[in-house]
Length: 201
Image (cartoon, rainbow, N blue to C red; front, side, top):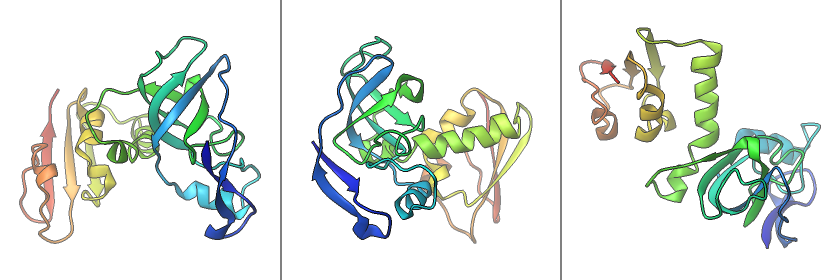
């Protein structure tokens, strides 16, 4: 299979396309045909050799189709996302046609989003979810102020995932009088530079 391999630590020229063996099925692992992957700041540090760990094939997240899962947690052909769990650090990551991820780092997806849009969600969603609900312990009835509401966080699917099961007031801080139809469809009421949207489950 083709993969983008870290030939040496350094700049972008350290990444080269090579043919490497396709990952074999293994208990507790999921072999995924990579359809798309996100690019993360962490991978820059790995490429430069600034972190202690860096696998030959970088990439800490991807979306794709299950090719094999010997332990049976995911059916062959399932649409999934994989992230972290050593991907790109201690095991070959997602910059390849196939990757093999730990079962614990894989989730099944039900989405009609195109692959390139779907690939933008896993790691940024996991980071935001952890900050909101594990670190801040954000709960029903609290108010959240999001600055830069037209950034990637604004993706409709992601906001629905966050607030579909919670009642909250979502305040979107937007630059100037900028308008965004996707955010408007979520029920945001525009007025001034700060806007509120009541999300009810």
